[in-house]
Length: 100
Image (cartoon, rainbow, N blue to C red; front, side, top):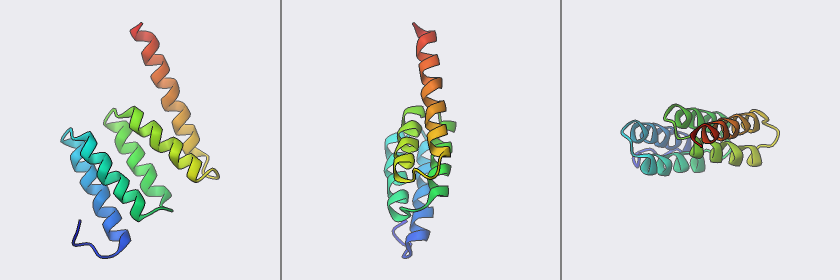
């Protein structure tokens, strides 16, 4: 990713690198790449949506929830982020209740 000069190219590269780390089970490293991707594309709604979906697919619901809430706070006019966060919160509560 360091070879990318433009922010949009670097953001895309960081997103891909994060996805690879996530698939390999390195959630902490993946989150570092995802954070860098968002920093390089601060107004990128689509990149946030893709990252949230990657986290959901990887069963990293806590991280997906945190990013969805942060995204909703940053972009309150983009209501789907709130909907995603609420769904994740409800699923987590249901899962927690079934474990009791």
